[in-house]
Length: 137
Image (spheres, rainbow, N blue to C red):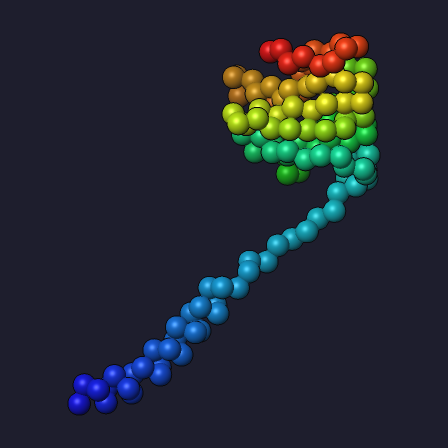
């Protein structure tokens, strides 16, 4: 008797499992947005992208470092980074603690500073030399 009930319930059980698996296995939909200079990027050629601990997206371009908060772009270049001599960002890296570094075409290294007073992070020139780059805080 139990064997008959098991056989009768087995097929609907498998059917329900397949429906649940299909429904939960579907990929969520994503919106893809292409940002360009008309949206606030200083230049359309993106060289590198990093995300910081505060959730900002940092973009290296040929016209500076860009901080993106999901709505607005803030450009950091020779005009607003003291000591910067080149806007052409070549490379970015992130260390184990989550600090972000950018390297420009003139061997200058920048670190994204996270202020302790709740303000938004900004890039700061660490050090540059004609013989190489030295990381100093």
